[in-house]
Picture 1: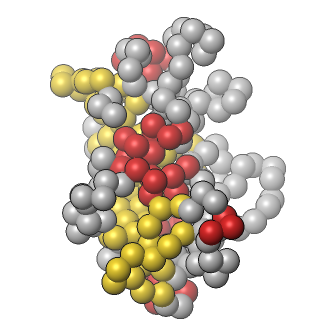
Picture 2: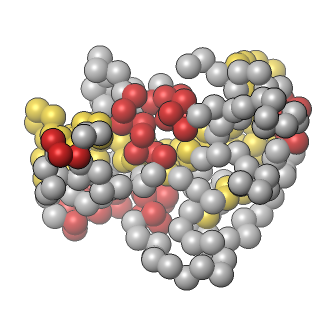
Length: 226
């Protein structure tokens, strides 16, 4: 693959935009910490997507960029100020997790440190850094009907994040359905990782060179539509 100085993948905004296109009317969607939260900024006002936050909000909007205009008591899972849409509700943590454990969440979008070729997810701890806890990630990974991972394809050191076997502590096994990165849109299937879309200016060979396991290239491979 050409150097990053020559060819750039999608920005984080564009990764979020591509994922927003996956969300359809009537879906109950949970957006995880960090990059996944950005998806809320790209939801079409024509779509009736109901956003769920595990801290106890159902039916919130995007991020309020000017924090001085936000309500300190109304935040999303990333701690960012947001607002309520018509028909929204607020509830306790137990009720929120009952929604997740009961498989009432259609889609969750999560960040990741690594995803394996089997769809195993590692997104809560890097080996050697014992900070924080697994939180609600394991509940979302196992309780949502569909798990989409949003992340950069490689680390800052150029190491693949899509690997044969996760080397970081696992959040959950075989839970990821779709991976959207700055280079590609990949579906996790029983046969392996199916490359369906590539970022503009990239080829299947470029994506494979940045991916540890072998990719199955779709016969209908296309460039991402943004």
